[in-house]
Amino acid sequence: MLTLYYAPNTASLAPHIALEQAGADYRLERVDFEAAQQRSPDYLAVNPKGRVPSLVTDRGVLTETPAILLYLAQRYPGADMAPLDDPFELARVQAFNVFLCSTVHVAHAHKHRGTRWVAATDTAALEAMTRNVPQTMTAAFELIERTMIGEPWACGEQFGIADMYLFTMTRWLASDKVELARFPKVAAHCERMASVPAVQRVMPHHPPRD
Amino acid sequence: MLTLYYAPNTASLAPHIALEQAGADYRLERVDFEAAQQRSPDYLAVNPKGRVPSLVTDRGVLTETPAILLYLAQRYPGADMAPLDDPFELARVQAFNVFLCSTVHVAHAHKHRGTRWVAATDTAALEAMTRNVPQTMTAAFELIERTMIGEPWACGEQFGIADMYLFTMTRWLASDKVELARFPKVAAHCERMASVPAVQRVMPHHPPRD
Image (cartoon, rainbow over all chains, first blue to last red):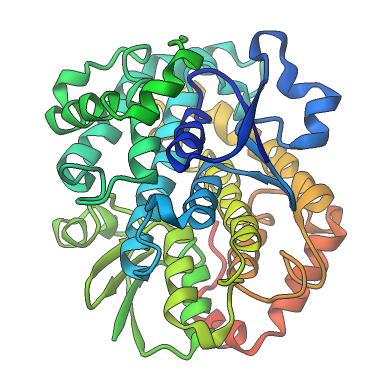
């Protein structure tokens, strides 16, 4: 039995889809961001980083979305969620996911989470960060559209963990004031994802948030 | 034959060590950051992100340090640079490296690369970002010291790709005005790394930079 600590419509949507796609035996634990539960002593005992997702396994806790996704792909090879037997193709999937994590997620986080990088008293800096998010998210998705995304899925023929993570971040564009229609391939991917049964089953847990 | 596009003392130090440790047949291509060569059309044709490292393989170009490191570990299994047969342990290694990439590297980049997130005209915001780097780097390394680092190596018994990447970022602390001595386990790890033959062989290519 696995336990996924999650918050709605955060990065934890991606491993949630993977668990469902894999047919894993899992349960959800919602972390209440409005109550800052991610900073509570109980949650910090699970994940000292105070972030979601965390995946509790029989051997310990895993963190960091790209790592959790790779773990689920390897733990459930029958679900065929990554090219496990091809190191080059697997590295391309990992490169996709690491870009989403370290560039796209970080760009998005400058909207409301600027105090990760400047003092809370630097209000002008925080405002400048928030103001620039549409530009940085646009630049990142232009790169995805122009140089990264495959067809029909993010990395080509095989549906898998990069699709789940890309879909998660694509859903953030509207609240970041970026028009999805600017990126026709990403938009088509998002629509395709919305028709995947595993995605449909988890979406009730992930209403949009700002 | 592999080609590593690198710049001295950047994240590309980590795959450089891995190539050397693996005994790979590779050559180096230095990207001249002072001349903004990473933004040149020639380099953007290799890596549209305009970043290093890039690893050119016989099947195509790989980017993103954690993905390149995993690829090298898988391509050279005899070098034993990652727990390839244990998905849980491998996920722990990947989680370590993704944290370095998306939290530590990003914190460090706010010193000189703030225009990734705010406009170049937002000088007060850029100054606020630079000013805060010692705090964010300290917080990240406190987390590593307290909750992540193993002994004798980053993930425990096995020397490997997380060590190479951690060592790379540890070397940035001095220019970020953070005292390494505050983190005794990280400091001991850094010293241990400096005695690894593969590390010693690559260091002449990586003089410190600000």
